[in-house]
Picture 1 (cartoon, rainbow, N blue to C red):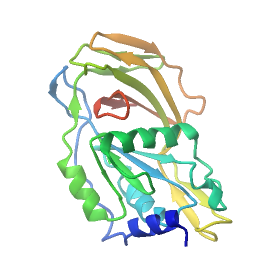
Picture 2: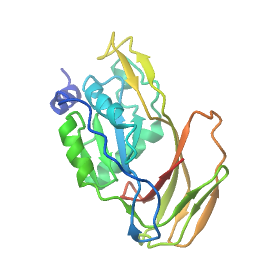
Picture 3: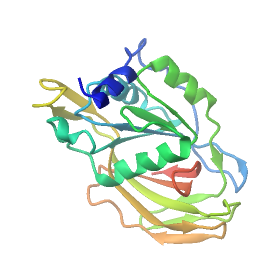
Picture 4: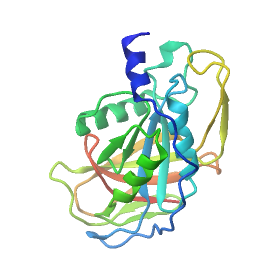
Length: 241
């Protein structure tokens, strides 16, 4: 077993219990600096070539319909050499995880869940995930308005270094992937809320700003906007269509 494979194996644990209980929550936005009523942003970084990832992927699939959670699944590229190239992975998603690893002082590996850009966990244990979601206190440091062709970010208190505005497109459908090689050979893995596009629209410094945003080419795809402190920092505001 290689050193990297040993590391991933050490990360693995059995998924505990049944699906996470659905909590009732709203996602409407309050004014800048106010108490947020929006989904907790949960990002899973996984690879179809990683034998430790299916339990974390299953835990994400179990909560994607919760109104109080915005769950996003990112495929990373660095395990593609193990025999199976992840069908959803992009280098930009790997770069996003690397930025989190630097910001959080975390080890780069899969699976990894990042909550609100502030906390990370392996994500294979459903109870640990539930507790982390309960701890999350999402902020809304600016209003975010989405329309069919426009994203508007309101005034608010931005970090000194500024923030990035990210447009995220993701697929809410169940995507069944039959793995034919590598560590998960022979398995068919269901994926939901798979990120298919991650675009930096621009920056936010605290003043109101707007960006053009074309509707997705595929009408099934959903859209989210994240306002985030630079270099993999905390999520400052979020909204979804």
